[in-house]
Image (cartoon, rainbow, N blue to C red):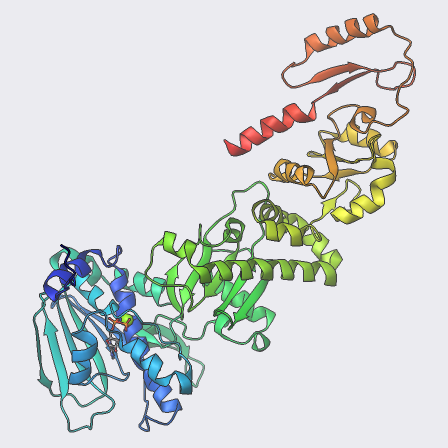
Length: 558
Ligand code: ADP
Ligand code: MG
């Protein structure tokens, strides 16, 4: 016999779960409550824009205040506020979102209007740090004579709700900070959190005051106390690219990374609305070959709310070398990293960014090749990394990936084939590219190759040996690389008629080789005795390609 039934969720058993496990990071209570205040303000502005709200908007600044004596944090907004009935619906019912309801109601008239909330859980994150939470609120729909509503809850499922005198529209949320969360009563802690999560929220947020020095009418400097607005409600990425100058982009970069002195090489302004929403600005930093590049500088936002600055495992790895901001309503907030990775929108967004990055590089290559060649040294690691890790990017980048020669020319793969085919083809018809990893150390080998009419490429980035393997492995490229010091030229690029007579017998050659071989490191070098009549270097000591590459690869992966 079987029975069916329904698991019942009561506030008694869900409350402790919310308090303990809803968010791993307790600090995000501030983000959640300020997002709600921003939503309430955005809703009011939306209602005003469609003519439903006809009153004065007034100053909409959100206030955050700490009272260390009373051990409270208060977050106040002048948004839509709530009626008693709305508190019953939106607050007392856990997981019922007023944000979602608002979006559904007005989406025909105002789109989704940039509302942040939608799970109906954020408010309760307050109980992670507070043992009592109070709401003082009054709705925009209420007349000045009507009373507002006071709601109070101590974290048990019971709450008290009663009318309270209140003249102005809006909401104050008062958190009575619990004894194990007193860190949040420190000014600097709250200021840091505001800087982290609220830096670019679309409504001004005030935290205390600050002193500034201003010039008065007579040009005399005077000190003035002004509200300390902690955020920039109008960050560059939400503006239209046409309204921004190069200087604006650079200024925004400095705003994002005040401690980075180096200017980025170039940037991409992302702006997509369909089939997914994505805005943002990506900057290309100069990546120095010998320095460990900085990762995870990209900040992810959702409707201007900071989500994370660690996109590792979310976007293709090479993209984590970029700097900047991406903002998408379609990347879920409050979910685990593994969920993010498998999210269909996240995948589409990643693919889009990869494409945009390739578009930009190709455009630069096509529009101003000389400039692109000049920047090559600073972008090559990024491009090589992308070619190695993303097949899609490889296909795009093989058209503009450059191979510099020791003589200062830059060739693409196709140009190499076109220009070097004749002389660089071996007896089996394969293209063999000579390269140097160190122009100075391999100078004499380069000279010799040049004298013989060969071109030598300079491939000296830390990813070179990997990229070479990738290219050689490719069915389509049909080429081979040989480091210029890996052997005598006629061995590196064997030609049909390379057999020559030697004046030494094989025995004499072997003896001579053994004598020299004793003097060098056998692990690293190989020694060959040349045909003495025709060569100016009768004995050649080389570092065989295979042995060396194996070593390098092991070092790289170690
Ligand atoms: P969500 O924001 O995902 O909808 P929350 O738990 O954060 O869920 O908030 C629940 C609801 O409570 C909101 O949707 C909103 O209707 C209401 N609310 C919360 N804070 C405020 C506020 N400051 N002003 C007006 N309404 C609010
Ligand atoms: Mg919310």
